[in-house]
Image (cartoon, rainbow, N blue to C red):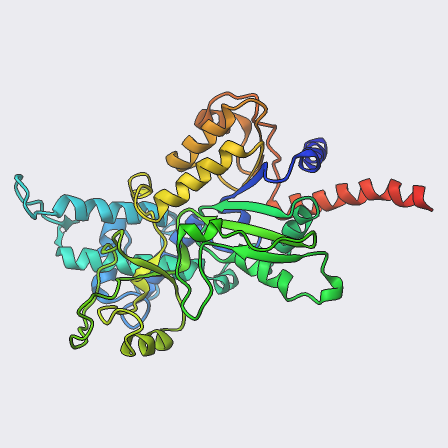
Length: 422
């Protein structure tokens, strides 16, 4: 294990600027304390079994989600059976199931007979199921928030380890490309930590490029990644590509030419996102309403948690070809074409479109991929990606432990230098 980490350290130091990229999976946020999909399922079960009304879910959504997942509410004084305590599905599986039921029950302009939405003998309307889907996505958004770490038993509840990693890589590279399917804000928080450190303790200044322009209501454009900021030897630019969106993304419809019409209030369904939609940073709802009333943003917009951009779910592969995910995915492929060393952290390679890009990367000569994850091995990886000489032996430890070991390797490398100087 130590030898593999030392080899990675050596390869990282030798690789040229712009030839190194990082892919972060859910395991990279585990050491902070973000709930896993399995943990979200347990949290959801507890919510559905104990929540009547007045909690996160309304009564209709509780009925739909309980029926579709086979969950029964706990009666007063009744102990849950082992089967009720555990699940064989995660929240994303449940979301996928909901979407498939909605797709099957779609009867607009269909040449086939209508499909009913009866679940366990109970009939639910499309509106009930659609509402339950929106509530479930809102529940997931809450689980991905930084304060959700207080609900888990793992992790340090601090992004210090991620900040240490960025600072470590920044010693060798003034440009860092990070791709992630995570929806949480751990990387952004780590960069914020680095920017808030006392100047005399900083090694370098870190500048985040995440596709959003600056302003009171930052908007997203793929072109913002090409606007290279002024670089110096003391500045590290971190390019962060969130391939599946983020909990702090939301979408608005554009202002129409006839904006002088009276304000129209109506709810925009979660799936009413189109290529014309404008992706914005989600800021305080009261501020957004004031801007809307002032005519700064579309008067047709309402602001519900259901509009958070944590796509593509559940049909990841097909939705990856919609805006903005097509552009983000293409940027991932283009970057890997120039990359020689790829570090992959905390993933079991569940996404076909991500694996396709990595396979193309591994097909190149002299491509190296290091995987840091305690839950996968080389056999599992080769089943997903195929046999390839570029796949290095898996470093089977957690991300925080990996960072600690890297720092030890670096300290050992610097020690002989300090002795020789004395």
